Amino acid sequence: MKNRTDLVLLCVFWAGALIYGILLVTFIQYGGTATASPVAYALSRVHLWFAASGHAVPFFALQLLLCRMTVGKKFPALLLTLLVVGLLAVCGVAFLSATGWDKLGWGIFLIASIAPVVGCVLAWVVYGFAYLYQRAKHDSPPHNP
Image (cartoon, rainbow, N blue to C red; front, side):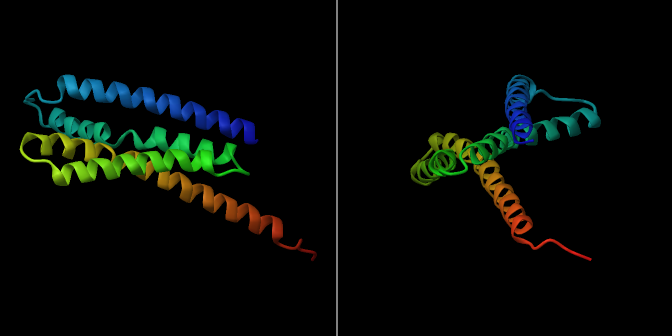
């Protein structure tokens, strides 16, 4: 079961990264065009939110896969989280210290770096709940009616 779950997580990572890449490229290319239809406008707003936060899914799958693969040693799994939190911190400090048009660029990077952190943190939460559930199931005495 573990191998199949790991394969599913790996496929979710690659599929999520591919879909996010396609969404991001199409949003950059066609996102600023004026639309006459209210339906097209609504879809472009949804497209904006997917382009801004869709990369949380690949980071969630990758972080959960790393947590599952490194059961005994947590540093490789923790490394991805530390890297994305460090990126968020660097973008935050640069945003606060920048002036002029540089502030806009760092603000965009700051907003874009929030989703990977959320994906990694949610993966740790899911892994923690699964670990506690397995431990409680293993430690509970068998029920004899």
